[in-house]
Amino acid sequence: MITELEREVLERIGEDETLPDNFTGEDEVRDAVVDALDEYCMLTRSLRKTLLIPLRGEVNVYVMGAEDTVIGVLGARLKGQKRRLEHVGLETLKRDDPLWLRTRGSPWRYSVLDFTKLLIYPCYGEDVEILEVDVIYVPDAYTEGEFVPEVRGAFQGLIVEGALAFLYLLVPNKLKYAVELYSNFLKRVGGKSEFNGSWVSYMNRIFRETTGK
Image 1: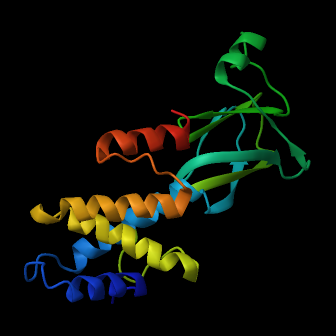
Image 2 (image 1 turned 90 degrees about the vertical axis):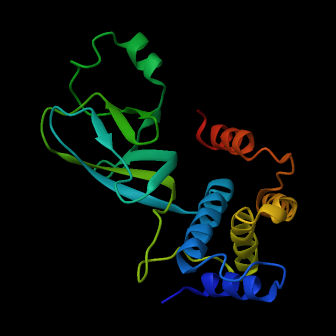
Image 3 (image 1 turned 90 degrees about the horizontal axis):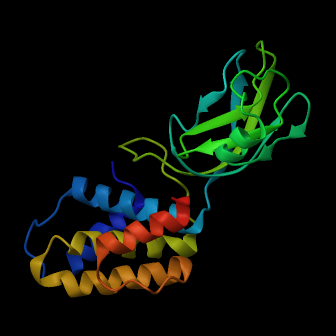
């Protein structure tokens, strides 16, 4: 079973008589759609959710996004106390409290470690609270029958265009067209028009801008 987005991509490919027969299959189309969805989510930062993390006694660091990839943290708060935590850098924690690893009490600060882990300060001495963390995320690659992120109708054609750009990269004489599709995709999704044809350098820069790394 294929998704609506995959079906549209296959239809567009089928309409292009310049492509070699059977140059791609459903697996390649699905991978291309997943790549386009990933970039759409990274650039628009549109998928958001709240993680519920049980705080355990004597634990400072917690892993986020076991099912999806977290690309940004919007805030954190103690659910029971309905109190927000202050976001600070790890160096600030170390400077303000050289013995921060030994400090115990009700958390009032947090730091983000490489967008996969959250550090709270100080940590509780026992299991007493739930931490709510608002995050921006990119969904894991889906397979047949799994959840596909909902894309507003106005952007479905955009995702199809992005997927086509990745697929046309597989055709030696279609590189220029692939670059045109990809550049248009970027302009429409986030107003970014600085792409110059260097895929690796461009995506590295976008990753740094999005994640702060």
